[in-house]
Length: 118
Image 1 (spheres, rainbow, N blue to C red):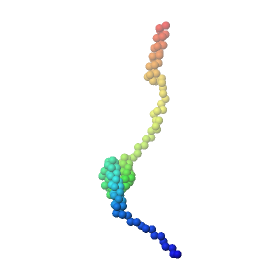
Image 2 (image 1 turned 180 degrees about the horizontal axis):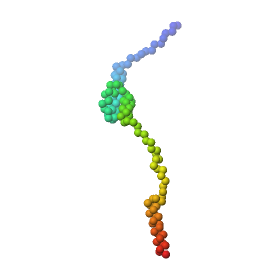
Image 3 (image 1 turned 90 degrees about the horizontal axis):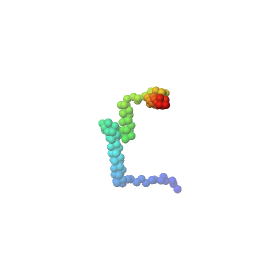
Image 4 (image 1 turned 90 degrees about the vertical axis):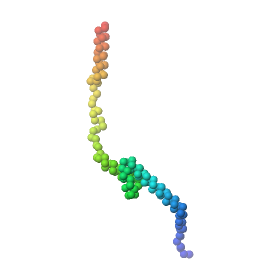
């Protein structure tokens, strides 16, 4: 018996299946384009939408480019060299507190009044 290669039957899509795929692709492309236009508008750069669409950017690529532009425009990062606890290491000196001084003066007056009243 001779070995014959198995041939698989390839089924061509129907016109309706092709139209459904084209329609789905069109909707997907429209949604992607709308998202890119929206991203550019939100970023304050609506003029870039046409360029991104012409270059066939995806939504993710457009977002990445807009972030790069924003970072480049914002200038260098600000670095602080002040430690979080700087300026908080002073010792509390209750004897210098106005409240403590007032309480001490009041206590002194009360003590003198008791001595003088006896």
